[in-house]
Image 1: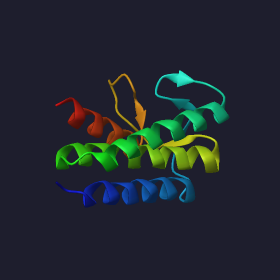
Image 2: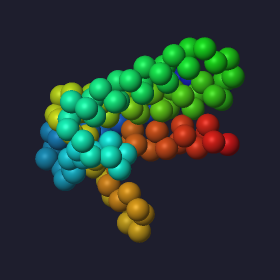
Image 3: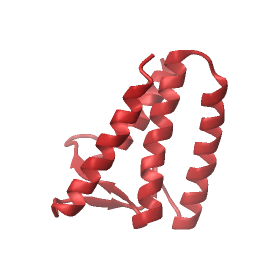
Image 4: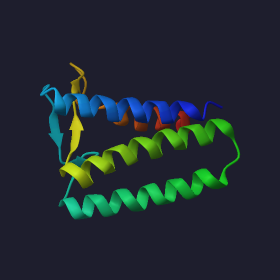
Length: 120
């Protein structure tokens, strides 16, 4: 499948987050993991464990679409984990009106897209 696409999306995600911080654009610090709120060290540990398991699975599967879906989830999760380690929160910078989760970033969309690919 398209193994380079998740890498490009990760680069665009990091770039948009850097631009939103450096250009003083409005952003929303998100201190939760999914809908789960916990102390930052616990969120970091949970994120690391989940990413490690997903990486192990991605290295063992041979189906290209499944591997691409896992790469989307892993790289999106890695970008959010990086934000938590450096800033203490994830940098959400755009909103979707009339949507239950109204503040997002590109890495959140990568995780959702990867999850939908896994589902279908």
